[in-house]
Image (cartoon, rainbow, N blue to C red):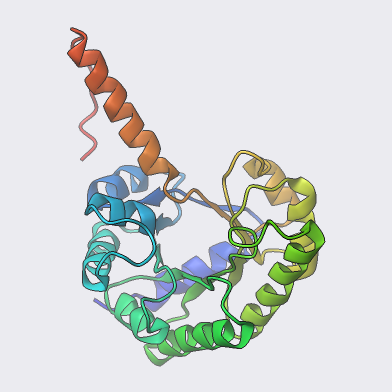
Length: 258
């Protein structure tokens, strides 16, 4: 099931829209259907860390690519909204990985640079964009730079400048927006928007990141939440199990969400 060009175009439009795109990350069909059932859900994103954990693998491309893509495809087939897949650094072949993801119905993806040398990272973005174009899909590529995650021990002005330089290069190579995950405040968000352009920055909802309404005012394109929705869900499960072990009983009115 090739990704619908209309779904991919809609995902691109949502990134360009003046409204902030909020995507709650999911990790299996049950979580995808649960979030997609909300009328506020305009698109979904998978979380590679959460999918890997589902199958007992650590994060960082340790899960076999076939297993990751199978779950991504199941999620895309289970919902009626566009799905953006977290495909880590491309599993050794970004172009081929994106081509396979498009064939499974995926409308967009994250692609990490792992702070590799810039020419190598740009080549990966170019390969991903070319692969989607060859399939006839206006793919929404969320090009991630790890300038903060792997380099925030550097002075702030250094890593911010690095993120902007890398992000501009990825946009020039055809990326839809630039994902700079990190736990930084509003002043850094404003610097990144100024350097990359409005509706070109994607962030993750960590404690120091401003709330969605303020991100929208600042010109941010997208916010996602990585593995944290899964952690919230599993934390609630663990708390419920502990309560039952203490002699508690299940409450009435449990919603049949799946």
